Amino acid sequence: MIPFRIVPPDIDETPKHDEDATALVERLASKKAQVVGQHEASALIIGSDQVAVYAGQIVGKPIDREDAIKQLELISGGKAELLTSVAVLNTLTRQTQAQTVSTLIQFKALTRPGIERPGYDIIEKYSFQRSYRSDGTTYDRAGIDARKRRD
View 1 (cartoon, rainbow, N blue to C red):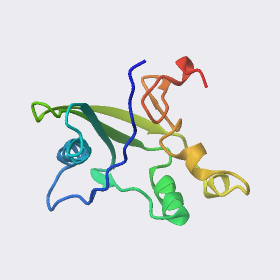
View 2 (spheres, rainbow, N blue to C red):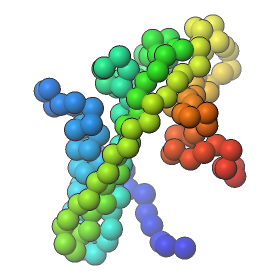
View 3 (spheres, rainbow, N blue to C red):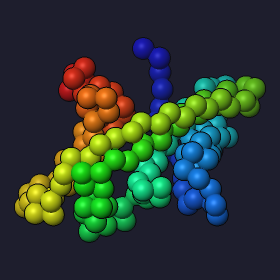
């Protein structure tokens, strides 16, 4: 096993003026790797980010439960694009390489009563974790085919 640490970087994830979703997700993934890499002399640092786009607009992270419900109602039954960018920084050379992939996703039809069911964790059930299908396969938040996962 390769030893590793998880270090959450503290960066501003606000989109810049006129920044499209692809540029945003690539900038954030690279920035996360660079921020963590400032404290490492000899390491490979992986930074990543995901951005959802619906109807041509970036769907930001919900600020609270009500905002999450509204986002899910908006996207219910619709198609969205999930952009995932991974950046790798070599702290010896200070070079960063990044790649972004796009996944079209189809959301299940959701109703507010179903989303708000008492005792039901909205984020676990209906967030991007296991809520979409792409080419007939259900994937988890990390993009792993859920049928191949060993929980």
